[in-house]
Image 1 (cartoon, rainbow, N blue to C red):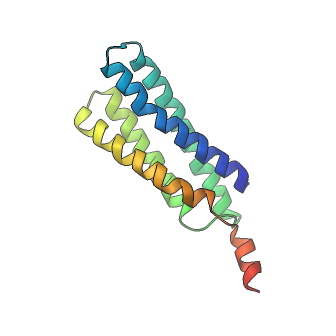
Image 2 (tube, helix red, strand yellow):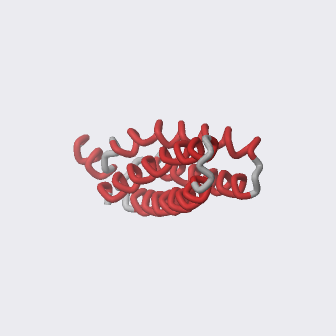
Amino acid sequence: MLIALRVTAVLHAVAYAVQPILAGMFLSGRDNAIGSHGDNAAIVSTLALVLAVMAAVARRKRLAGPYVLPIAATVFVLEIVQLTAGMDHVMWLHIPLGVGLFAAVIATLPLVLAAKSVKSVQEDRT
């Protein structure tokens, strides 16, 4: 389960990292990149949902620490706000929220990758 959680977190981070590249391509005159930016946003949000569900299951089974679920759930909710702001062309929210989410996704990735099963931590203490 932890391996699947980690793989999903990496895929999510990679997909999220592609977003500013696609936005930059659009701003550089490649008009078709905006469609790719939107398509990738759907992928990013789907991966965020999967990650949040997996984090909930991992937490319930005591396979992950207490921080993984709230981080994953918060990122998912904020990504839905981000996606909605982008689709509605609310750029004053879309751009800074995207920057903040990018920082959050990248900063929390090592925490998910380093997560150790709560069960194994308890076994190490005994």
